[in-house]
Amino acid sequence: MKGSLIILSFFATGLLLGLFSWLPATWQNPDFGFIVLCALMFAVGFSIGNDPKSIKQFRSLNPRIIFLPLMTIVGTWTGVILVSLLLKNRSLTDCLAIGSGFGYYSLSGILITHYKGVEIGTIALLSNIMREIMTLLFAPWMVQYFGKLSVISSGGATTMDTTLPVILQNAGKNYAIVSIYHGFIIDFSVPFLISFFCSF
Image 1: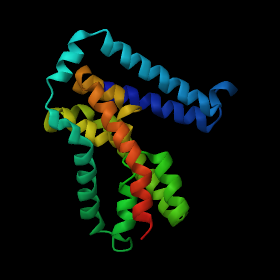
Image 2: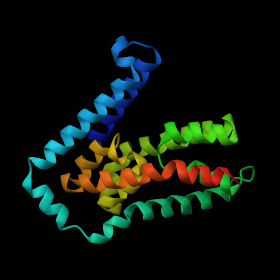
Image 3: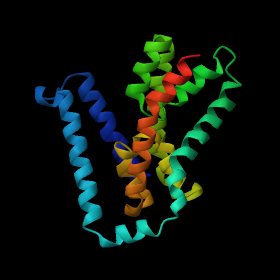
Image 4: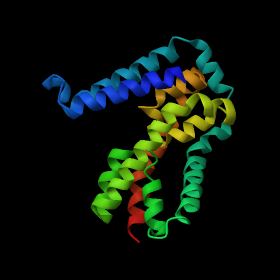
């Protein structure tokens, strides 16, 4: 839990610094975030490559793990359908569109705003930010009670970038490749699924 709070505090600090423009001008360039992400991916790759046990542990994982992104999508939709029963003023397709952001708040917020308007776009932004923050905060608890794959499913589209460090810390290095693969597949599905549900 302590590690999750540290990571979350860095996120909150960055949010505040960006909000009040207290960073050097070069850091405010959109390319800077991409450079930092590349550095993170390099560090993860180096860490895996430097530990021969990681590849061996990955090979020992169940081959059915390739279906993890599909299970994440189905699990998310199941939760969304149950929640939609309590929301009388929202259609099921609107709820499914919001849920299909899978934590990819920047893209989902923009897409849903384009198709459905600012109100639902804002709800999508906030709900997907909450998914990411909950993954960062509760990763140790999820791993302890629901297994190591649960934190990857919870992270949704963020498991190849922002939630990757907390996944490695709690699930272990041998889940790094699974996490990156999962994040890539979910990431790729987001624009197609949102566009599909917003078309109704």
